[in-house]
Length: 122
Figure: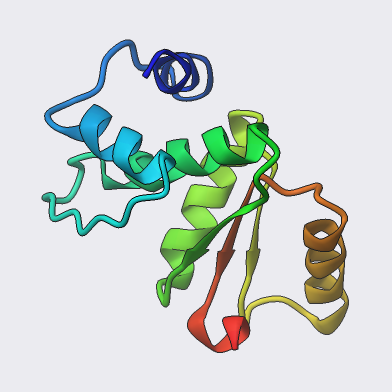
């Protein structure tokens, strides 16, 4: 939990988890599956962003977030990038050249988190 708290503080600027976030993050970071239902603004994104960062920084690869919500992907990638996280999107808003650049970054291990639309995942 101390590594997760360090990421929470250093990357996201928060000093403590809310509700069951810490428990969820530990479970997911350890490879567990989880269905999380929280209200808007409840902190769901941290429940997958922090485990992705923990696993990537431990050499376990890039975190892949599958989402059909293009605007949400772009907002989250912008916020993560501003916080120093190497994040990108792969969806229909990208040109062929942009998509190829993201794919190259992914294959080269330069991304910590990749948000991908379901149709791009296939």
